[in-house]
View 1 (tube, rainbow, N blue to C red):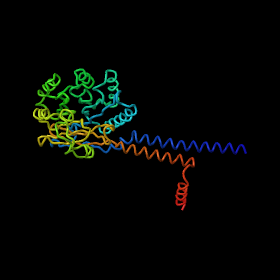
View 2: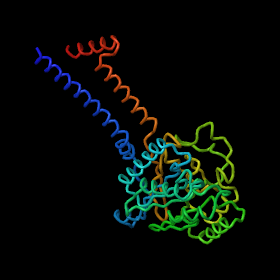
View 3: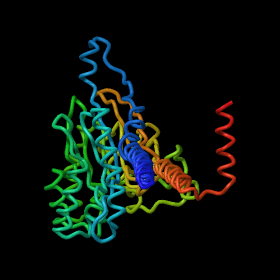
View 4: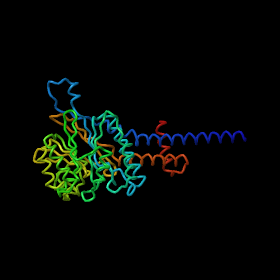
Length: 373
């Protein structure tokens, strides 16, 4: 009798252990998919756009002559003042996995981040700044074959009235950034603009920035900056990642939401760029300046600012360019997967403990009977 009881206990323990192992496998599989594989599934669908190339070049020469550039914006790494540890963990993991997956699958030649790298750079003291930089360098690590260029934004050094030489210098020291910096890769010229300094009030930083831009004006092909050029609002912006309908007709404030009319005209007159890329608004927009110069506002790269973040992929030559938008996984979709998995987990546990209502068992009996037939 005792031996039978012992056998029953062992069988029950084995059954319980097997059930717990199944639950653990389910949890691990969901975690692996939502935290790793989903980025590969989504970004794998993205591709480099085709661009016109010179007819006399071979296919190998043509491929080598095209610059593959990736543009993202407004990562807003949280700081010690406003950043909750859970919010930091979730958003920064999302951006790290998205960035590392994109590098692995797409292998860009160069990556540009168009400002607002940090959320609290304008406030942070030395120790907090150093911690933010350390986290950024871990998240956006990259191989030697890929360059990373970073443009300054208002959250990195403050708006014009908060901007100081000290903040500019510490940003420049980490990211090797100066306003009006010229970068030439494969015959394509990029000018990185400190749009915060284009206030037009003659301040020391502003005067230096404008003077350097004027010297470089004859060499510009493409321009990257944080603030968009002047536009009234986002009313003409379209696409699933543009501003919300109720926000599109809200007038933009010059020198806060967009550059002033004067600064915008200066940039267009000085450089006559063939392409302008900007960030700041966290939403997508494409506008034409003077009827021929396209400006692309790149949406935020972080789930903290939007449910459907994205980045721009550009195939660029000295004479032409082509752009493609690559979306990241939807945060709402990942949350839905977790909710479904959690509900399934709950049902399995209740079924194992036989705590479900009789209708469930009646339905289960019918299913088994149907399978048997």
